[in-house]
Length: 142
Image (cartoon, rainbow, N blue to C red; front, side, top):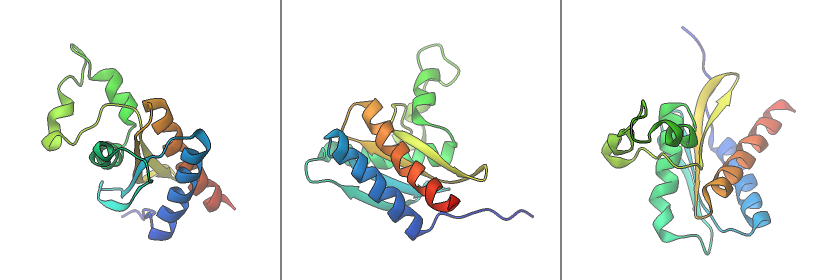
């Protein structure tokens, strides 16, 4: 049996604070979701001017990143017509996201969760998600 690290609510708060700070820095209010390793929601925050239509998108990006254990961007690259994952976006009752902005969270090479951001350009969404993950890893390192 192996012991796996688990994402805690305190960890999620670190991720959320850093992600929100990055969103403010780039000037885009975001919907930000954080899930555990199973893709179950731990924390969600909609900044004041974030798109209401992006709430479900952010949550689904976090779900996809955690449950699939890879970035939503990587699925976008392989899910085009004729690609090896074509049609995957309709799996899991349509929750499977294939646009950038969802990143898995790995600690000691173990999946512990996912972060999904939405309301900006997909590159901005991913940048905000990465800022949250970076803050968590920094806090764990020292």
